[in-house]
Image (cartoon, rainbow, N blue to C red; front, side, top):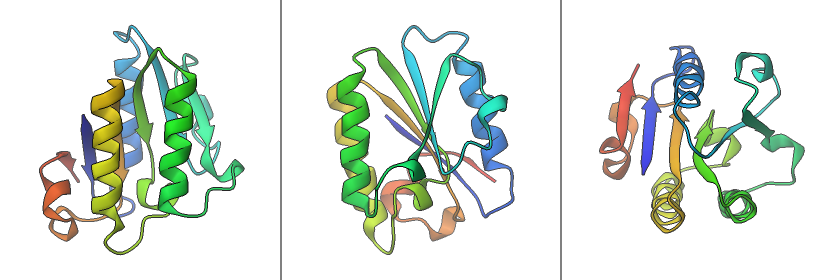
Length: 139
């Protein structure tokens, strides 16, 4: 399952995402990973959540990012949820690639039973139809 938190920059998506991950850890039976573009939110996350700074790795395009995700999934058989803050930035998604990225995340999610929650810095109206159906919060 892929869920999207949409809204322009500065609307509170990261705060909502942090609250959501910290709430879900209370009832999680598996592992939770939080991907971000920095270590900035390390102390706001529950210590059971694994924070990965994507910029520490040589990920330069959307397909490399999807491979990076597959690597994380393949190394953790207890992985239950992944939270992706600043999705468009960390995934290097440009133009029409958002459809491609979401379709691939859907496939990974179904096959390996991992829930993805994405923070996307765009208004709901600016997102493609495949993404609009996955929006859980629009700020």
